[in-house]
Image (cartoon, rainbow, N blue to C red; front, side, top):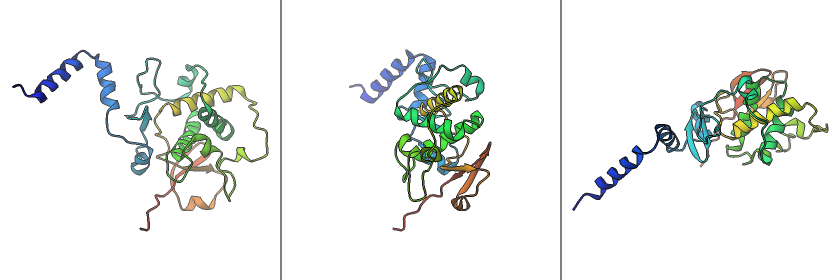
Length: 219
């Protein structure tokens, strides 16, 4: 009687031989072990994006073909992208980038997006982008534009379109490789008390970025 394991292996090899090489490569990337942003923060790698629940190392947003492609988000790449759209999570991220960082370079806006997404994926913070952006507390709002009393009207359309494209790319799984898992940032002109207790990971444009220390259980 034939060995069923050998038979199954043979059938699998036959099936894979019919899959195009590019598709096999995609499969090899998307079936690895889970590696979320928490792991990136611990190791400083911060280059593992999550798309469709699978870990993709150095994989950017999905292209029209639906396959992940490595990208570099810069001005030239953004100029080639169509205006972005999305749900409430996209809108919250796009608005945060617009109001908090539209005067920054593309890298500076991507870095702020990394902080928001890292918070979303870190225990102790709200589990949604909108929750992170609109989080308040005893010390005031986390993002000043949400409670500064000023109008939230989008006055610079081109700047918002760019912020929207960056938000779309980051939500679609672009690598978070600039801030090493940062969960906080502030302008260089201020010195908040918490900054002395956190590990500084980057300075990009007019912002300094920090990673909140891991909290160890007392049990």
